[in-house]
Image (cartoon, rainbow over all chains, first blue to last red):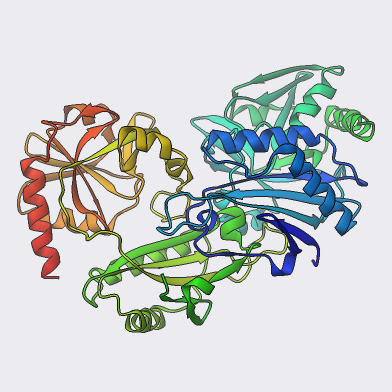
Length: 273
Length: 273
């Protein structure tokens, strides 16, 4: 992937992009990121993503070393150079190089622009999840700590699952890279608080409110097994039906009718954004 | 710090040591480490540390790309080259370079050998802690995720505290980089399970059993305020008295008598190891 990326003020070829090993993102996981997708040269919900990125940094006492206007210009320059048309854009901010491998210093900041592996909005046949007792720390912040899920790769393969659904103290929160929605008795239900507030989640809720009533509230683990339909939402997934969790069938075991209607409404909204 | 380090089979100068930014330790926090100290050319409790490192890797479905005997040889070679006398040795294993920035590949493995900033075993005047509601995921594994504590640097400075003490669901577990012990009514109490099993913790328990009765059990947050004495233990700290937590005085507000006796016993044991 020989695209151009941006690190600490410089544009350079992605294959040449490295950090010294005393970076605190590597040594201590002190790092945040965000990820969004270029669609035919535009970036849907661009400001939502940037809001979240700057807020994440603030919340962890990190400082993004570039203002929003300049950041937008750098991203535009990257997209112009790489000309991928549809692509992923990842912002990554770390605690910087650290002599004692512990204390933060001037942050390292990079923008990556890479091809997307599959087209968002592909509704598909329904996906499978597995469960993990885990609660993300400061869940409204997008940290790089995906170890709990990545360590489960063998189990994911065994169940042919694509994501891990987190639960803790009897409540579900979110999956590795997506938010979760349940449909029960023609009502849409999604967990809050204790989650990363997904940008797609926000716009799906916004779209769905013309279709059915919705609730943002604590959701018990057992509600999964009583749900009529379940789907997940994310930047790369849009609306994606869930048909099985931890080997147990959800609803009728195929994508539900409400899920299909919400997906269609969201895709329509998205294409007009 | 122009020492030699070891990365993926090669010895090279530390200033030249870098990883491509698609390393999964950096991008997804999929990484473990361990840390131990060379004392005058020897490594106390060497096998304890290596046991923990290999076990951590197993537990997360990672593979250390070097066997124990070869690893010991590489470490000996590093110490011989760097000749620091007393130094820190850090092993770091990541999920490797990842094209999709998510799926693990061949691991990246490094050994760093760096000066220690202060001499272990300096008992001192007592240190301060602050509190955080947090439970480490798979606590028996030494992951690199220190973000919850590092994000609190401003609060640490405000309280002149050196570590963050974690509690969750009413129970205390451990501090950022140390285990915690309470003394109450001439009994030694330390939390278990839900903690990283520190090597120093193990040997302190071993040493202290000739001095007083001890309990490894769940410890409630409120027990902090009723303790006669509190101390923390760690590879860089040995036995270190705690005199204040979150601005509240512990015991008499100075290092306790049991803490001093246990520290002396441990230092004696350590110097004869």
